[in-house]
Image 1 (cartoon, helix red, strand yellow):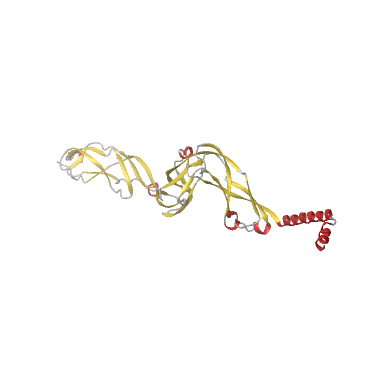
Image 2: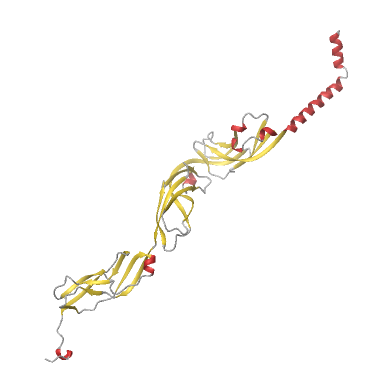
Length: 324
């Protein structure tokens, strides 16, 4: 009897009670939703592949939407939400629509409730076989060294780097540049480290992407030409004399810019050494530079001059004004 009375009480005004229950559930859900929040941010889109690689443009970042309790999603670090294209499932070249895969790590794990969505959900890409190759590294030099100085040598370690990318792109990839290295106003050797500058989004650098370098700087060298230079005679026996005309010569000199810009040719710079001539005759004599230790290289034209050597003739007494 007691059970029937309780049951009848429960069923009494049951439509009203059901409406109250529904209203309570709605209020509960509304309350729960008031505790939930949304959060948006962008993350890099990476590629996972064993062979095929994208050869067409695709977005480098995607938009992530987190939905969950405000206190929970606020503690999720962007670095713990990974977005990538899984290309390992594709075996054929050509155009494919690839879904964006999301992977949660670290602070994004064990958050309840949590819903994660990504925009765009899939990406259309053209796939080609991936190719690796080694290319030379080139230093990106900017600026000018100090006045009268120049770069004499660049040493890069390692001199080459391995890169990977789709086949059609790699065929056109011939080198890898570094970040800019300033030599402005420098007059001494220097060294350092530089990051490789990858300007092609379809190419990836295998390794740490950094090189060591040394730059050697020296006084600048220039080449200067002199024409119509007189050649002198030295060490000729007192009993001999030159009876032929001695032509002027021209020469090209390679030396330090600062020195050459202030240097002038003197009368003793070029000589014909006649110390080995002991009797009259016709001789081919090499043109000798009096002092060349200041210069890197000297080219003389003509470098050999022919001399006619004769014995000195006694002067006519009458012409000299002496009494016979």
